[in-house]
Image (tube, rainbow, N blue to C red; front, top):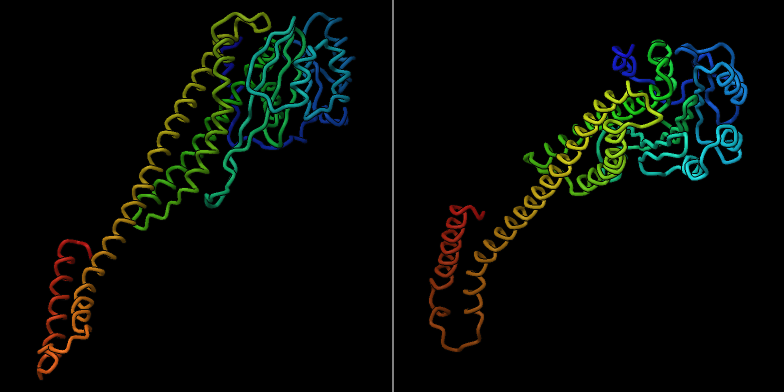
Length: 361
């Protein structure tokens, strides 16, 4: 039954971004409710009934589940669903307020999961203020006969994922845990896409730092490090929940799905390793840039010192002959002035040639 699960939950590229309005189930179910559907044996049932009717239908038949999707609901908009499904107040508060860390929490007969979604922000050229990573959130309430997804942010639409799962009803027949796995897999796949795009930015900065003109600025490196830190905050806390879903029996998760969470956890480990490597690479690039700046400053100081040494000769000679002594034989000598000028020029030329030979000029 689940032999093709990976194929079912992995979406073709490119993925559709933004809110999907092309789905036939899109209807005015409320300002926050994006979709509400009943699935029996993995098949979506006809009709766009409200949440209470859908839940009664499922519990009356004793099979199937309800999948409700919401986007940035307010407390008032969420209140009816909270009462209907008996959601825990602490989880509801997190789902409404958002800005939560990725986590997995058990509440009575439901499971509350938080995912941080990420999106790479396209830009022509990285600057000191470029936004590279944009984050959002997806919260899931998973029960025996329901899945409630709450999405925050302008990206991470679940419409295409829902349609992909509906195309393979044998996957949805497993139940709400199949939806949980599909969303986890989608989120982690997005992490991989973003890290690949960030690597391109890092490669560009590295190339500029080590180019002959050395134009890679520290500001852009720090900006990349800040954006990388935001990505790390989205990825790193998810390791614990994925390990728990992959290695421990969870009552709300079908045992047939557990093995597939191991694959998601492995992909998450790869993302974490890449982020750590990127951070170390950026540290090295920053150190190399600072070393280049120091070398350039040292070169400038050597040139300045060399010219000061050259100019010291005429300064000294002119200073000697500028003293107000009565008896200075050279002043009364016909060839005194040209001889002194020749000596100054020769001395400066010899010093200049020596600095040039040593690479100071």
